[in-house]
Image 1 (cartoon, rainbow, N blue to C red):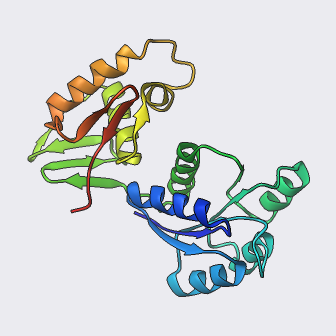
Image 2 (image 1 turned 120 degrees about the horizontal axis):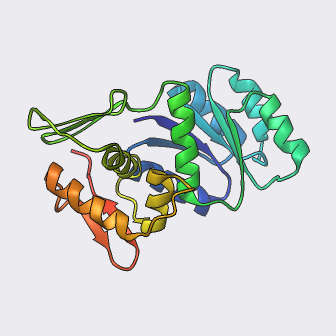
Image 3 (image 1 turned 180 degrees about the vertical axis):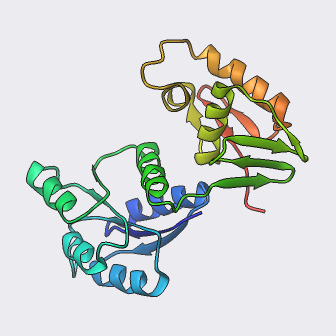
Amino acid sequence: MARILVAEDEQSLNRLICKNLELVGHRPLSAQDGREALRLAQKEKPDLALLDVMLPEVDGFAVKQALGEEMPVIFVTAKISLSDKLKGLNLGAEDYITKPFEMLELLARIQTVLRRVGKNAKRFCWRGLQVDLASHTVVLNGAPVDLTPQEYSLLETLLLNRNIALSRERLLESAWGYDYMGETRTVDNHILRLRKKLGLEKEIQTVYKLGYRLALPEE
């Protein structure tokens, strides 16, 4: 997956973001001030940078300017004014998300940016299972698996958020679309079919009173 610079001076939030990035397979690079962010960016050449605007030493806007146009940036900040948002976007940022935010929303925006700049993973492999996100094909033990478009969309959502517990409502929003008016039982039925078709009875775990988690530890 991607190397992602996390420049955030609030230690608890920095750790939380890094932990969630690791859970979905990214490699986080943690910095708590602007100078450290620039040093890590020069040394590690990350695929994407998450920048707080109000960083010590060198603020996020200045860090973005120093990074140049080649490195994609998402500002993650408590500065909510329109003028600050416009300034960040005019500097060339890919996105601007204000605090507080839901972690799943941040992860979704990261995936969108990585997809747009061509840095996201295009294939997932787990033992005998191979999923090609570019061609929307699924192969199990060398044989193609016939999934309906909705089953594939659900599988992709689980993969991109693997090891994170997702509520049925969140799965409906992500895999069916915000305008889907069906009941959450629809998710349960599709989960049962995915488990059976892909042999993921143990990996697609039920999270009590919430939803599901696709548990795929790194091999």
